[in-house]
Figure 1 (cartoon, one colour):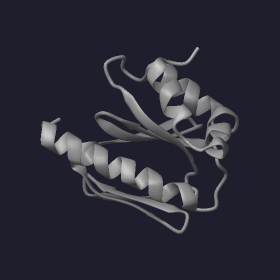
Figure 2 (tube, one colour):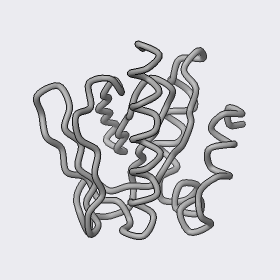
Figure 3 (cartoon, one colour):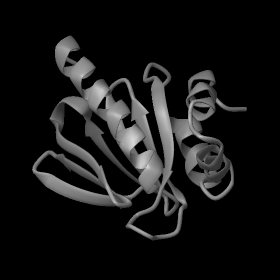
Length: 131
């Protein structure tokens, strides 16, 4: 059974993205569901890949505190929202600059720009709330 915040986040994405989350990204979804702290709320979620045009088997999880990339190895990278200096979707790439590093992930182009908007809003809210 999924946490209510994760279920709600999945219900907010387009059907093709939610299908990927619930099929090819299942191991990542189970990892997040079992281990994300109870007091950290998932705001949005997306299927992703470790690289542009790569296999869709990973997740980008937007919480009220962090943006987290989860791959099936298992592997997870997380960035506090207030440390992200760039979040940009461009032709199938999703770029994240944070903590002095630059990361390039794969995110479906048409959904990527929408997800980028959610990330930018979450960053602004985190900065304003000083989280």
